[in-house]
Amino acid sequence: MLMVKIIKTQNILFQYLIWHFLEMPGNILKTWKNFLKFNLNYFSIHLLLRTFFFPWRRYRIPYGKGFDIERYLEAFFSNLIFRILGATVRSFLILTGILIEIFIILGGMIVFLGWLLLPILLLAGLYFGFKILI
Image 1 (cartoon, one colour):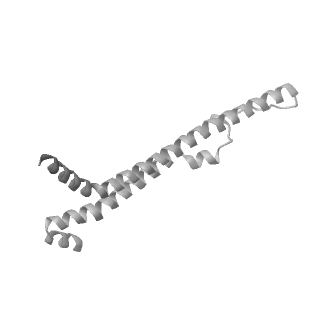
Image 2: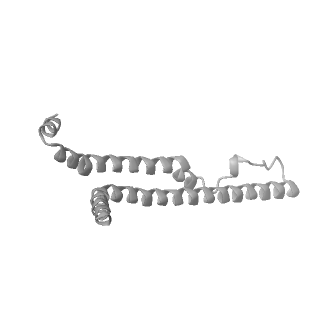
Image 3: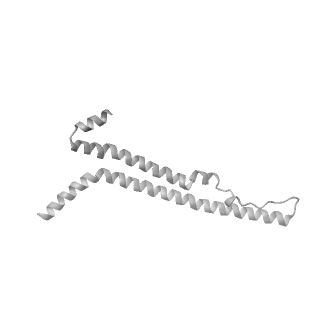
């Protein structure tokens, strides 16, 4: 409440500087953090790592009762294929999630630094624009 009263008594230039360099960078950082959390949750990277060698979609062929070598080998190799398929798909999803996470980090850096440099770019654009006219 005190900050609002202080801001209302300042002139518009100081209000703009406080908004541009104090308030908005905090909002940009919060938004950036939310994008990073959403991506980790969307791809469930921690869950995929925990269940890396689980069978794909919990497909499982039972071994049956008794010991029949043909049925046992068929179930063993089928279950092995399901586990390999699960690990392959999960590794693809993990790599995709990590790559998107890297892009979000780089994009957030560009947005954050671009926001901080925006007034300088505006002034430079005005200066060089008027320089071309004259």
